[in-house]
Length: 450
Length: 140
Image 1 (cartoon, each protein chain N blue to C red):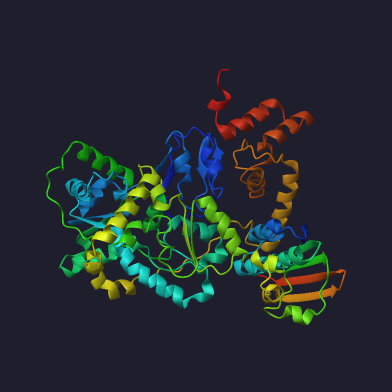
Image 2: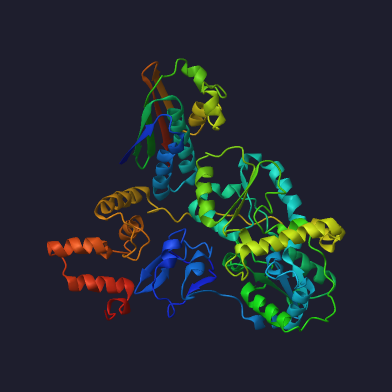
């Protein structure tokens, strides 16, 4: 029952894919196989973490964004920026320069997503105070982590704090603010500048059955290039400063590792990197780890500073944002009385997320007796397979091939070792073996001149 | 029915949890109700830690059927003198060293019982302890 459940921002461009299997081997949910020389995705297993995008040597995996001209469908065009965008640039590039580039691109307003933190941090703390029974509580910040829990750790969905992330809160606020000024809601378009694929997926098909308050997505690398080009040309050296509200120090570092763990109460841990997160969740699920109150889990190394669409080195981004937060803290206090705080009551009434449902992708069959039959077959098949996890069959490891075989997605002679055994026994000949490999790896790889 | 066996070595805390991790991987592929999966795995994990902390060696024997999961954990070890007392929450004979590692809070047996539908224990001092943990599955 591999029916399409939700939108993926990650798309494999078959014409560019060279079938190198790098993505298949890195995928944390084993969602990729190679067929006909191309990567093939099980959509239901994909959590949009973007690890495949990082390792692709030929840029065959793309992150689908909205057509930029979509912003002009709206009279009021708001660019919603994450702090890591500001963190992409060296300190001599001023925030006002970045804002000005966005205005020149066609946006009417620019607003930082992490202003939403000033509402969220209190409501997260309040939730934690009242939900001792679900500890450790898990932050809902990273959409790839939420999806990972849904597909691989279904027993832990109740641990997720069901509250909207800062960008949603900021979007709801900005919309309401304009509506209060008499603007028609249909004239407002909010566009998020995203550092990763999972945020796009979360906007295009949110968990629960909701509609995102965000109207479109622009990839961060696109904006990065525009800003850099204009600033380097000196276009904004003498431009007037735009008036913008200051992000709070907490908001500035919220999307970095420890951004949430530092402000939550009790024993809080921050874990980044999707494989680290999986290792830790295994232990949480066994209740091996006790007395932890809060977990901040982020799919990317160095959290959003390491987002797959960022352009700058993640450690430099972290350095810049931390410095910035310290500077704001010691020089200003105006972030304590900004406009979004006047909307606390309204925003808190909209803060709860829809129900996050488990959707385990690991079951061999819905019917348990059938699943047991299949598991027995997997065990039998594994006895024949060589245990080398070479990937030559087009599956990431022997276990995955065995499971694909019982699910009728592959056959045992996809294994290159089995082919040799079958050839020796006279069950298949070398021409057939060659054909099998060609079906997995494509014609070109088996017809190279050597 | 499916049958699995795992060995446990006393004193090797770094490997405690191996059998329960294996059981979890198996149950996630078989059982629809993830709450049953979780509590069964938690029960076995506690039992494994008990063996590692107190016994010389142990064996985990798992039988899975469509209506129930039956787990036996048999160890060779000092045994339990007063089972009733050992079942009390907070009662522990764990050494200071074991407690420092985060184990031995005295919740072990009680927690196993709370996480199983049926729980049986027998023990002989100087010989060993046998646990039986059963989780019933709803037949759909």
